[in-house]
Image 1 (cartoon, rainbow, N blue to C red):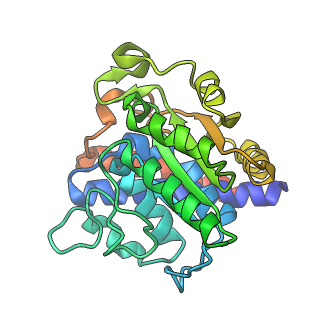
Image 2 (image 1 turned 90 degrees about the horizontal axis):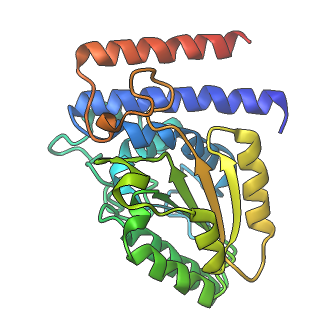
Length: 281
């Protein structure tokens, strides 16, 4: 990755974060914390990794993305809007009656959404099924799914992991956003899933551990995922909940709380400053 490519992705990620704030402030509800921790991987996937066409969201040969931690829909919506699947002006309609941007992704109403999700643990199962179907149909497409570290306290993801290994789903890439926080506090204190990498390896995955805010490390990890044959791949990202907004970072209270007017202005001011700095480099 060149310095210019990295800078462009950082600018895009800043815009995605601003969109998250626009959505949650406009909706007066939503989940900014986990959306912000995953903003960089949303950016990387939709602007570099995924084989997609915003002008043809249902293109049969596209790669699929399933947001298993569906409550972080504001992050997905912001990435889709910035990628021009629908207008940026739609973001503040989050959770409004009649809006196509509801609190959890709906594949029937939102362009670019490949699976309706929200019940934690179920998205990864759907992704594994998509990957198996692609193999049966001989399609040259990949399936990516993003889970939260709190989400993998559920039993269903582990059933899906066994399924993925059993069917040798080397077209499936599982991404875990390990931001260490869930709605009730520290993940390790609520119900520790650690050591996550060792457990995924025991379930038959090839595993790469990365800094989830490093585009350079993402590029290397996803290249390894594409090159791995005969087994599914997992990317374990170490991230900061609320990344990019000083008063939200590493605060469990911002799991599912929208910013008020003053908080919105402060957050947007911080992000605008970051954007100006990046654009001036």
